[in-house]
Amino acid sequence: MEKQKEVNKIISNARKSIGKFCIEECNAYCCRKGYILINERQLNLLVEEKEQIELKKENKLKELSFSGKFMLDFSNYLGGCPKLKGTKCSIHSSLERPKVCQEFPIFLLGNNLRISSKCPAHQKNMFFPFIKQLEGLGCELTED
Image 1 (cartoon, rainbow, N blue to C red):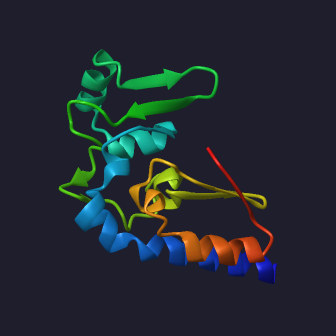
Image 2: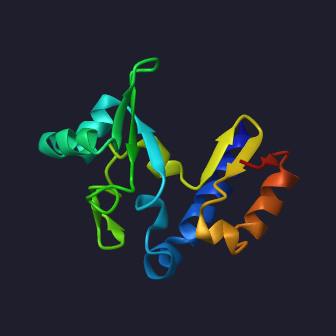
């Protein structure tokens, strides 16, 4: 259990370490490009009902019938996530914020560590010291 706490602390520090970079240099790329998988509660938090209708028409919001989840494509007429205001998330501190948003760009499943290759901070190797610490604790980096 102590090891897991240390792993979680390192991952949290890694995410925090790129905050300024995300706002000033990256310009919240992850919130403007790509897509996320969310449940209905998260969808309703992110997207107002009238926007949902438009996004469905634009084929940028799809319900995945096999899982009960929704895929929200950020390359939409809104210019990204509806909660993105400039380069800042307007619900960043909300406990209701989708889990994928809370965890991005570092995901841990068991001992497997995955860092999104689309993240500009990762492309600039900004997570290198954290990856080394995590590998020292037995985590294995897998490429996506």
